[in-house]
Length: 264
Ligand code: SF4
Image (cartoon, rainbow, N blue to C red):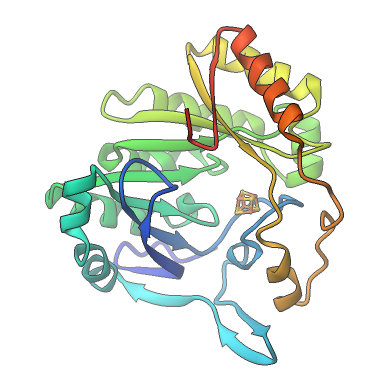
């Protein structure tokens, strides 16, 4: 477990000028560490709770670095003008950013003090206490719903569905946070009809009317080679446009507005 230090975090990337991880132009702070092991993970370097090195093009590279909250805030503040003009801000991602919730809460709190909009990307796969630390300072919660059957979720990705639901409902109950549930469409896993139905039933149950669906991609496959790890999904074909359209229609038919890849 990464030490609970609000002033020091393990970061594996800070990406400026992103337009994909929340509204407007954003700086994405990628926090190291994830309790899950999704076979489709496109950031496998994020999973370890320790600093990671990999070998890329024959050269050894250190991926993750300890940074102080002040150092991260210095990076964030460089683009304040873009946040204001585009309606953007800062997004904490991962890994699972809630693994470093004390540090994350400190960053988000300082952003709010500066008037910078805040977001997190999470799977909610941590004890409820961790999301409670960040929610008071979070404007947008982009929340991944993956495998909803508790036995299958435990077997395939090591997830605890009860914990995920508790975190999701805590976010929904936070009046200052807008929650955007997202479903990564992973062939053979999240896209099986029974799972899609369980997701639809759950979002109905908690009163959510819109979800984002994110089709499977292979962007992370080369990272497994750099890490000398086996990527078991390298031969899995992408979903066809028709398959994505069918899943979109499935949700729409159940009165859940579905947005593909964040695009209307
Ligand atoms: S939750 Fe995200 S970061 Fe963690 S293993 Fe799954 S895909 Fe990777």
